[in-house]
Amino acid sequence: MGKKINKTGCENCCGILGFYLKIVLIFCLFYQQNTYGQGFSTSEYEKKDIDNEGDKYRKLLKLDANSLLVNFDGSKFIALTNGKVIRYVIVRYEVKSKEILKGKLALDCKRTIDSLLTINPDFLSIKINAQGQRFDVQDGGTYKVEVYKNNAIITYFTRAPSSYIEHKVLHYEHRVKLVNAYYQLKEVFSDEKYKRIKSSDTVYVYFEKDKNHQSHKVGPARTDTEPLSDYHYRFSNAPHDNSMTFEHNPNGSEVRIEKKSFLKKNKDLIITYDYLNRMGLREATLLIGNKKVYLIDKKDFCRGKIKLKKVKVFGAWIMKEG
Image (cartoon, rainbow, N blue to C red; front, side, top):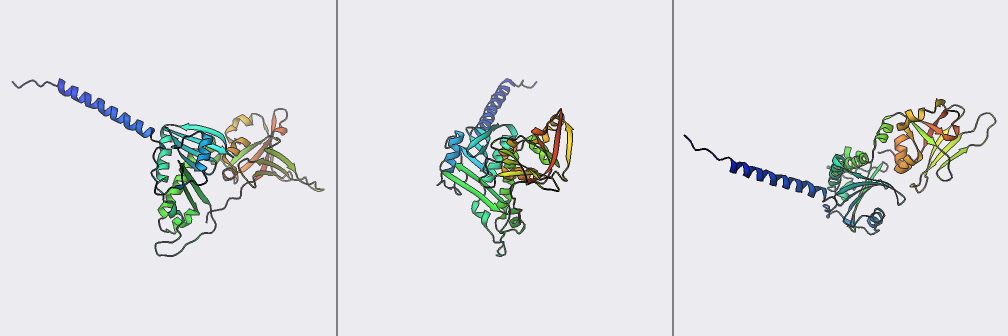
């Protein structure tokens, strides 16, 4: 008869080992969550923040100097700070929104920033291909992202990247990385309403005249036809030509009468001034500039009915990529 094996010792040993493995795993996850913003892995690319842009925004957002801050499109910011990933919308140094990202969205955002930080900014301006031929594009859409930490800054900027990528200029892979990171960061700021508006061919703009941001102007009188009617959204974060105009031609543009319940049924496709102002004039133009747009003027509400006026949209001039 063989000896009886005592399993108690092995079981205890495995149990203790399993317990310590769990502790190590929890520690690793905790460490990952709490090192957001603590390391600036691209020190070889950083430059001194001479204009103290990072300090201005950190002071506004009440972040410490160790926080890593990403400035995307001039109005959208992502902070990696004290184990948190936070997104902000800032308009002329005024915080319009703040949200702490969690779960997969936070991790995806962190990975995107990690990828961004591997880009060499100098490679984004190369205009020579592998055969030594120069390729230059004068016009085209621009992509810009800035990263701040302590007194350092990294600026990523390129113009018409798809053209340079297509012609495979030296180190074009870095332009590919920037474009991918740019659109991944943009997705972080896309809520469900944004996605529905983007996928729809028709949207509705709600207008309510006020003293500062929403105005209505009727064109000069004509003898044979009614004058054009222009509605303006005045954006607070655009320094120069800062208005989006909705032009209605009463002589030919479509006008629809709907029940007031239309507002509730189509609330996800109804856009307000505040909604567009948060994203800025350029992004607002990109979002609705090529769609079929109807304007709903509050003063036209009457006896449970609303009026929808088809309008042309004039916003920011968007340069097409070369």
